[in-house]
Image (cartoon, one colour):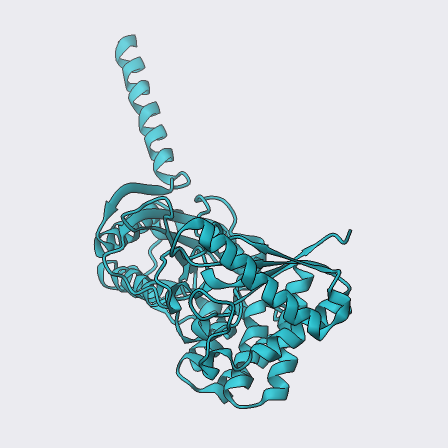
Length: 394
């Protein structure tokens, strides 16, 4: 009899443990197999949803859980691309069509106010893989608590994915990546049970406004985009590089050159404050001559003028760092990137004599590529940038 009772208690103990384990914090899933993009996306989505099944909020008898999706990004550049839009579409469609519990809402202020969950996602090229592989990261965050409740990853083969930046990012003169964008990327990698990145999460309401403004810009509604970016700027967390950049781009597209220059001055000032500014100066192949098409190089004089003025006004010292894409031998690219940096320094010196002793050219070749495709077109334009890094003055 004692043995029977002891055995019964043992069964009960393990049953309780199993039940508690089912309600415990989900464990992030990560798949190391390299799959076709559609399969990798489906796997990452299914694993994300699977982690939510035993959460208390999902065990309750609620018909739908409203989810908003902050537009997904390239994890290396912080850009939206045709491929990140495809990822976002496929994840959203699978959650909507395969799992009736989710109600996928548009990413706007009204939807954010009533949604329970925020979905974020990145795809990041694995620079160590010669075959062309992307790491996909998805995270689901509880909007009320700010904690990540599910996170999953998968590896997708680059089977001809279109990584061209969307219009806003294609037209951007700078690398649009600040603490908010970095926080978004970190959130996508955050284990379940941990808080989403604070800098990012506290600014999600403004992110809905930025997303709306960028959508207007991407569809060539520049006057509307300008108004929406200005409205975003007026919010407490509106001073973000994406907003400054959007105001510049919209003004430039509208032919408001004076207003565009003032806006670009703000972009430069923000970069100097954050001790780094990456600008996309495009050169003719193998030379230090700017790209001949005025649609591309037309605003370069404006950019150089404001970089010089803002740098001189702030009395900072800078390394002018040239970069090249991954085409050609390393020694050639090292020399080319240095020559381009020296040319930019020369142009800055001509704008402000104060900068002669405050700037120093450096060439990095392709050792600090962000995109790394070596396509030498709009897709890897960021790799052919010139960076202005604030350093201590001698």
